[in-house]
Image (tube, rainbow, N blue to C red):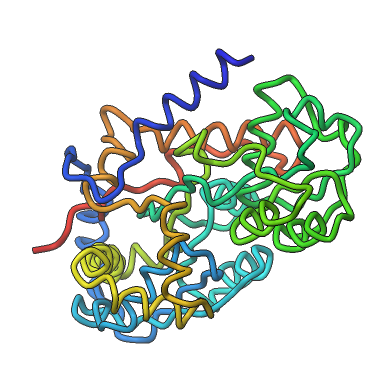
Length: 344
């Protein structure tokens, strides 16, 4: 099982870049087709994007605050939606035009009949998610029969934990699972109510600050598996491809600004996340952002698909196995690499 785990992790690692400078070509067929079939390429109304307060989405706040969306011709408003179920229903009802969430959640959305497509990889967790446990528990196997807190409704941490369990031939039936949100799971562990929790920052740090807990394992050991992406409704993209391109371009501009104007960028993101800039700066080490080159490498090409397709396929397989979805999702149906190259 260790060999299986290492094999998938090594595949995923190949797609991870932090402001990298290498890249490869992309396919622009979808964008060209959309432009040819639409006389209203750019949307002149307000484009609402839903996202939670996860640090990996925070550069989009920079794009909004610094006018990068408008610079590229898109009138974008970011709406805070913490619940994945709420963002799913908002997307289905066209109350929002795009959503940032984990790739595995997009698989769940697609299986539920939401006709969306991922056009941009945002970040991968590199230590921001993990398993906190009592110090005497050293391995996942030693958690068998123990009380663990976990969000069982789907999402990045649930997917990641299922991924780890599948590599070890284990399942949720091996544990006394206490279902709750990832944040509540971390709080429950810190309060001493459970033996372990699958959660994210800042609860990993808070668990380590107790006299009984530590981070037993984190996502740094499996880069490229917990991936956050941006998706839009297919019909919106078909009608307004230039607006989709504008959002991608604005993301790249935001990453550039984070590199060149870190202090101001941190102030913007911290204000929107309700954190202090210095704390946010420390937490940034737990995520890796995908720039243009990183996106192209992760998506790959039509002729040679990248690791993104493998992760989506793995999510579809796992969700089918755990009965979270009732039909497989073809990765090619929810991935579109048409907009990865910056417009000139």
